[in-house]
Image (tube, rainbow, N blue to C red):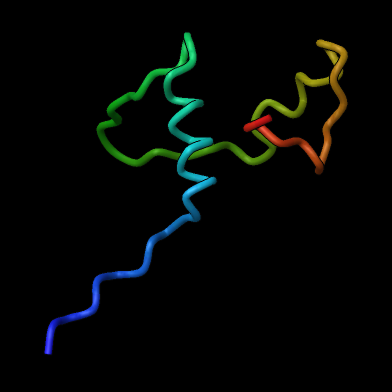
Length: 62
């Protein structure tokens, strides 16, 4: 009996959105030595400076 392949990690539509984003100008992949961390709050503290308030409904793929 053949083995079952692993389930996909994303829907095809999600994968297409990521691929379109990767093809946009200015997007790049980077290599990190060591541990990649994200500071608590990230750049949210700068949002007001640039006229953008924090939004819990932001969709980076639209």
